[in-house]
Image (cartoon, rainbow, N blue to C red; front, side, top):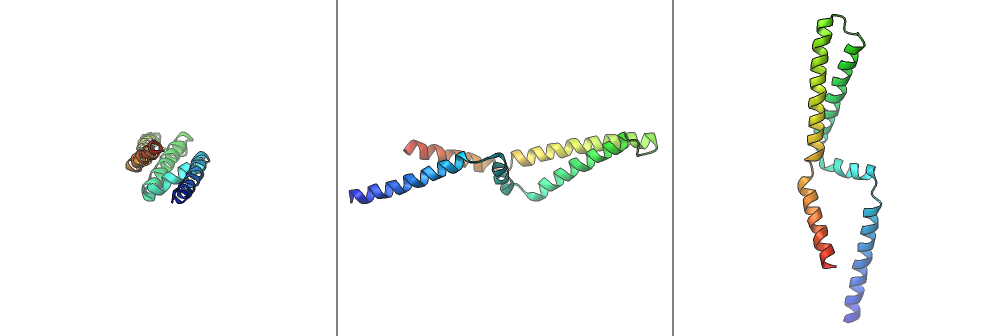
Length: 116
């Protein structure tokens, strides 16, 4: 019976070692993709398109592609506001998507490490 418990603990410890190795091998792209699964894809796409379109309107007006100066000025203001709102929306989407999951994940890690 003692050998059986020892065997079970060694299997658990081997799996724990593999898990720790996997945690150390996480790179920026894999962490980003991990966060992307918890983010609503529509919000992320909408924010990125809003940033892109606002920046392109500002770029077009700065390149004098919009002929009346008053229209270019108004378009620059609206494009700048759109870009700022898109950046804020992207920030909110990325930071508040998995707040509870990460908190739960940290608590589980603390419990597991305190038991070992």
